[in-house]
Amino acid sequence: MVWFYAALGLVILLLAGDALVKGAVNLALRAGVPALIVSLTIVAFGTSAPELLISVNAALDGVPGIALGNVVGSNTANVLMVLGIPAILAVMHTSECDTRKSYVIMLGASILFIGLAFRGTFDWISGLVLLAALFAILAENFWEARQHRRKGETVPEEEDVEGADPEMAWWKIILYLVLGLGGLPLGADLLVDSATEIAQRFGVSDTVIGLTLVAVGTSLPELATTVSAALRRQADVALGNVIGSNMFNLLAIIGVAALIAPMEVDAEFLRFDLWVMLASSVLLLPFVFFRFNMTRPVGIALSAAYVLYVVTVLG
View: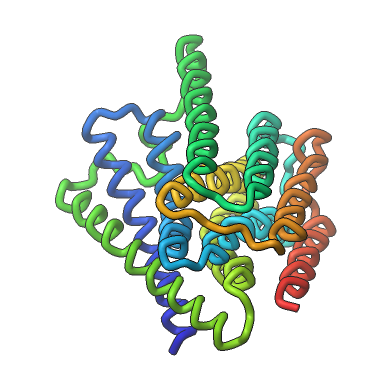
């Protein structure tokens, strides 16, 4: 039953996260919050809500390996699996994308995260540093978007915001919020408890479960989005989704979790997993700066690298 409860917790998390995004987005738009701010904050945080609740729950339960493994493993999976599988299905024309700025920011966030990890603990100081970096990035994005608007250039409108529905009734907005806010802690509690029990049964560490089972589970929404974008020949959406998700995982999720409860860093993270995460991010450099396309051989290589990583971690 423990596997059933883990799967159930994951499903509840994903559904509750989606409900929270829809409810919060439409409530904010109804309250007169500009669509631009909704895009940069509510949607970004809402789609990361499952990972956030898992990390916070794990930190409070005294299993920091699941909290940190969830983020580090998800970032590795996002590059190798979430981009690798769609590239096998359809060529992603990343040569047409301009994600250089956001990619550099993601690399910077990764280096900052690794630097803080070598302090040995993600405590309130680390949390404030990560959240300050996130705030600076959001503020810069908001300022840049305002500049584009002043110049008459295109900025996101309400209908472009994920989850926006101008016709949504108030009762439905409230229902989505209740389901999201109620389902997230329930799903996180189920998944963390089940993952911890699975680790104990199989004699592996919480860190290994966080890096594999939990990380893959929480990367499934990104995989679905990226596969859909690849099949529609929207490589910019696929690449932007992964880069944005990785940045938020490092800065927002661990930033908030570290403020709530300190998390000790497993020595294995410092020796191996953090460097694999960074290396997988560096692998995107040719596709971002040198305009290479992600072809089927590239997709196979990325996916094979992820399988090798998982086998190594489990071994």
